[in-house]
Length: 366
Ligand code: NAD
Image (tube, rainbow, N blue to C red):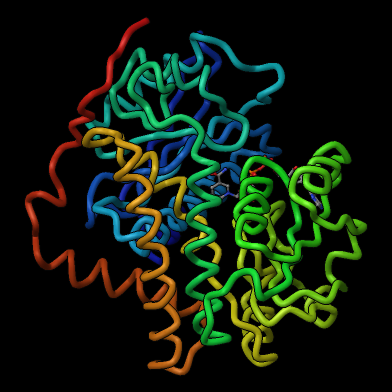
């Protein structure tokens, strides 16, 4: 059953990690290391069953292969899940035991933060292994990736505006931004700097108030965000918000935001295309976070990070070209770009591409 799945989706390796004393039950999935070591975050979640945890890590690790490949990184795809409640099951021993498993893979898998994990947890992992990204700035790490993700989202937006309207003047258009968390509020700031008209919503009233008072945004209701007269719908909260119910309501001509898994289903993605809405594929647009942490591998530097974010513009342009070339929706074109890159670059057998991670400029210990 498991090997059948691995066969179908092409995973290379699954590691079941168990340490009774530390209460650790985790799964590391390495999907593909053709381009380089597998990089992807660790999620901590109270999964209802072990099967749910396995399904999640297999799906997420495969997603990382595509994301890292489209981002142009010399990095493959992997992910880890720890089965447990982040509110009650965290301990030093748990994360150090997990770190030892990461270490045992000798750099084939490099971890980072994901849902349920914060930078303090990663400090414990880091005590046991070098193969961690997103470590604190005091250790030479890259810190919070959100402003980079927002900047990368802006690059994706520019490419989409150019494609759809032949014009990259952000201030000429109206935006509906859903979610004003770490990324959303930074994105609103960037829109405001470019003179845009912005509608915003969030379940957190303080965040809405800030967007209104600081960035002159217009607040709308949680459900109203789908009906506003905007040119661009920018999901920056949850996944699945482009669905059968919301799509017919959208007036936007472009969907471009930072949220993961924006399309509820592939069928919805096809329908987006039929309606003439340009979808900027989420994992290509929001790659700023992974680009940022990936730079820790050979020495983090903010300037390099900003430069790298700007490549998102070109990645999106390439995706739009492939969509046109092959007559397919953009969400499929993104997958195709990833597959083509893995195929072609994989054949080059670049020693540099598969070099052992070096993690220059970082300091371990307290
Ligand atoms: P966050 O938790 O800081 O912010 C999410 C915001 O969405 C919160 O303010 C929350 O109140 C709001 N929200 C939740 N449900 C909502 C709803 N139904 N309607 C309106 N608002 C709602 O998260 P973040 O780090 O800003 O990430 C936002 C999205 O971008 C997520 O989907 C995340 O997976 C994705 N992403 C983030 C990064 C990053 O660097 N932080 C990188 C890649 C992808």
